[in-house]
Length: 222
Image 1 (cartoon, rainbow, N blue to C red):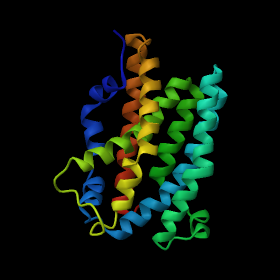
Image 2 (spheres, rainbow, N blue to C red):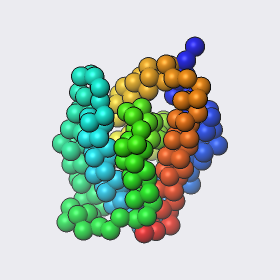
Image 3 (cartoon, rainbow, N blue to C red):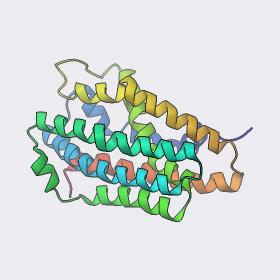
């Protein structure tokens, strides 16, 4: 029997839980996150999405099958035509204009994770790239589901971050997460133990960089 995505999270259990259950996430869920921290995160996440789009363009280049090429195209199109627009609108609700977003400097945590993803994709294959991206695409969906399972999570108008949770618990994002898990499981099923060990290292590094991204938001660091 081959490997599955859950084998990656099991191999990186402590880091994965530290990411999913980070104080930024907990405070967002119970509504106590400082607004300045959330605004800083939102702005940096806009910059991250731009590089996320570049990663999908790289995935298209790395694709060896028409199915993978179409998947990469769909991911790139979704970010450029839908997600970035939604993010700009979401930022506008927090009094952050598109002009402000365009003029932002990148925080070191933003540069570290996005460049790691692109470097991993450049020097590795398509599976390396998807594993490096998984803490974002799969992780955000799992975080929304985890928040909904916590008694301390506050939903509705009393939580200023409820819309964020709703975005990632929504069927569109959850469907994308399930599709990515299906893709990863199909490819992980065929890897050797040695290759799986390499992918664990990629996944662990990417997860730790995502932890740093949450902390960047909490600290409002550049």
